[in-house]
Length: 333
Image (cartoon, rainbow, N blue to C red; front, side, top):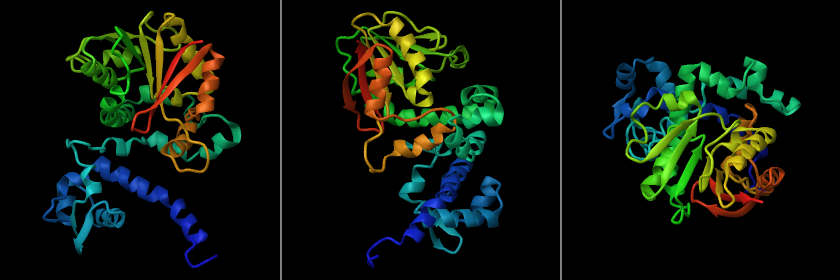
């Protein structure tokens, strides 16, 4: 090993202990620490007082964060913001505060049982809790809300960009299947006001929207299950961040349902990450280890094509969006 080579023992140790900084960021985001740290410098005693935290334990947490350029310690126990801590603030453009504490208590516990998934191929949620992840989140409102806020946070950043990549000039009607809070369909209609759009999701999701979501656009809200039936005959269907949550078997069921609703000239846009081949690092590979514990997975291009072929669909084109997600255009075979 030359003097310029990375020491493999040191590198493995760095990677292995990555969960420590991961959880530290989660806690900092959940507690809103960045909201209490000012450019002039804020003593940890004041942060602890304002946030109702233990001063000694908080200092040790912030010292760790500062070692990763999340805050900076200027004098002993005095911290200032950094570019990384800025994006953990509440209510600022580009914030990822909610996204940074996506992982709920049960998800953290489930990921701790990754070994079970690798040994058996089964999701750990069912093994631990007797039900799948989404059923669990539906029954545990606090965790479900935390997960929804995190996903909305991710979506707010990427929705306008991805919507701009969709060729919809000659389109009349679109359906966002499993569209959640309606952020993506709203972005699509804001950029394409000539469209009639439908937001389709489970009854409890649609009922929970009230009068606050998608009001500024002509979105029709329809409830149901994408395993059973989706609105018929639209020009375009979207499946955004849906297929990676499910096994191949379940994905085929979802795709069959959408296919049954499509007219001969309809298009389906699957919006998901495409795992690159080879040893190149990619966020989808990290996320996949987590998704496996609830029965999901990321896919490379060949895996997507096999899914489509199994249900009588064909991949027409792939568009890179400039986000972590790609736009896969699919039609009837």
